[in-house]
Picture 1 (cartoon, rainbow, N blue to C red):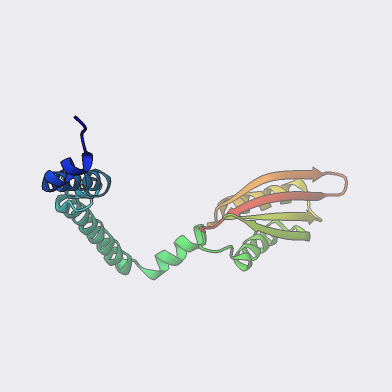
Picture 2: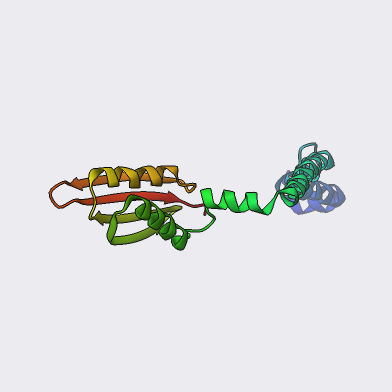
Length: 175
């Protein structure tokens, strides 16, 4: 007895179509739909509770920012200028020149050379001073130390014979 597949297919046509449809829909489900259904589960991207938690935390953050803004408006402008003189929001080379000139004037030294470089929140000042004794130089350093602006003396060299002093100072600013 010879089995003819065509006859079996024709006799069971609807059953074959049903099996083929189940296979196609099964493959489609696992390849396409199952991944998209995971976003609907708890913790998925369509989970409303997760977004409500984010919104609640953002509201708390917003109230903190509003309070900070109110506190800022209450601040005295002279206090803000004083804070800006301690650590500026920009390099402020004229302010640094003034501070160095004041320190120089108190000490009685003469500036023979000065240069500035600015990078990443630091202004480096290279300074050569002359025409003064060691006590004058100490007075200059004391005045730099007591200045409202934050300044660090990084290097210094003293030439006693020539009465010359070389100083490298770092001053800081916010970027």
